[in-house]
Structures are given as C-alpha cells and as structure tokens.
Image 1: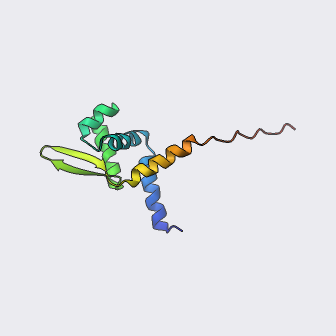
Image 2: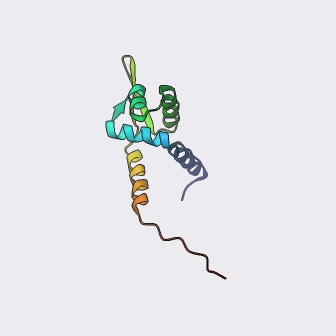
Image 3: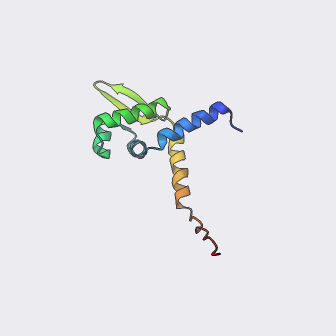
Length: 106
C-alpha cells in the first residue's frame, strides 16, 4: 500500500503537525489565508523567534509556503489537503470513545 519512503515522509509530516504550537499556526493560516511572522506571533502569543522556528519546520515539510511582498514575508497553507487532514482529525475527536474495559476481579 505505502512504500518505505512514503511511510518516512508521512512520519515527517505527522511529526511536524504533532506539535501544538505548529497546529495553532496552521489553524491561524487556515482562518486568515496569509499572515506574516508578526501577525502569527500576535495571534498565538508566541515570540517571533519561536514562530519563525516553527514556520521553518512547517515549510520544510511542504505544509506551508511563503511569498515576499516588499519588506514582508507572508505565509500560507501550501495545499488544501492540510485543512482536510486537520478536519479528519477533529472529526475523529468527536467520535464517542468506548468505555474502558474493567479488569475482572479475581
């Protein structure tokens, strides 16, 4: 079904998305289309240095893209699939979980 390389690539993407601050940055970009580091720092209460570090990781995995406009760099979601992946995860969170099985008393 998946090649070894595809599995490694998926693991890299899921690792990048597995950090709460990065997910918050992705959410902001999904909600606002295109934002600068300063915009993202304000909206997430993270330092600009921390936002930049997380954006670099997200860009390296191809989840986001950047474009320069005069003195500003704007970041945006690179592919609509990112929103779909996040949506599927949220749908999974809404599914009722089965009650844990209790150990039988001996």
